[in-house]
Length: 229
Length: 229
Image 1 (spheres, rainbow over the protein chains, first blue to last red):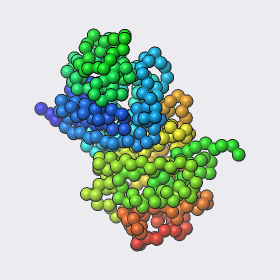
Image 2: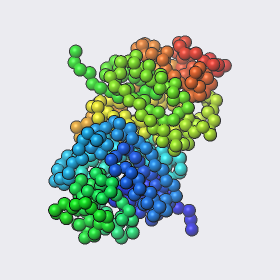
Image 3: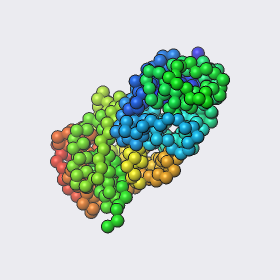
Image 4: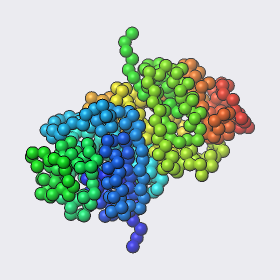
């Protein structure tokens, strides 16, 4: 069997990045990268990351502490003085859970690691439609970042960002995850709790709606579920 | 007097970033940003950073620890198993002191901070010609990164990277620094020592040659100087 190429896979421990990683693992050996940026539920996310990395037989694993993003502040995910909002999926604009330029920080670390270990792809589970308006989840952002990689790495380096979920809805992600056997039961999405998912934060609400629309039961338990589920 | 705009200024403590910061301070209030990435001479560089920030009356100051770049390794600046090479200014190609994609990591943090504090410019003292071939010191890299910023930040955000030294030689940087009163006596460039600059590492050699070509005496002491100075 020919040796497979290596791909760095950004894995938060959430559902999207789990499906993205499972897609990567179909074609590549995977190097799993988790960023701890001082989010409230980091301990639970790290557990999910490790369990998913085990399940997908990650060849390499790196956990990077970038809590300076919390020190910089400006986001309810990291700033405990800003309340985590209850979901309103009709709300437009940039949510308060936005960490400025977060994905560029993640990708820069991923590229540094990829160049050192000889990985040729970086998988990130960004979703344009269901991203609640985060500007660094748009396809045009990744196209621009791929150009930065070509300009900013050694001439012999070839690294490309792959966003396998970018055009999908949450329901399509759930369906694809089930089809390819992604370990959705190991994932953690809640922004608020670490024991039982709250069911009402933006992230829980988007996930639950996705499962409902896909006609699949979410394998993890919830404290409560929104009325529309 | 009208309120001045705010600029984030990346300052290593070295000569180039000091001149870049002094140029920024002519037009903007400055927010000084220092990245500790586990380099050997970090303690001395941080002292230089603070002294330069004091001298230029920085309005804000942030020191961010990104030692994960050291953990990722692959560079003689951060990996103590790779020897710091003695300068050979005729050597071509990527030097071993290269930290993969380092400046993208720096800029991503700078953009996150700039967006939170409302800064409109980011100054970085990158130099294309004297950069010893670091791919992330080229003008085309910064042009590409500016596009990533436009794509990856909020619609109302306007942040632009400024590279005031990009086309200069080290000699021109020395001359400009002297002209505008940049505190070159406070800077630290040596990659090897923290007490008296070694004079023979790549960084010392480039600096000394720049002062010599500018016809200006370097105000800091050296342990030894290359024969051609």
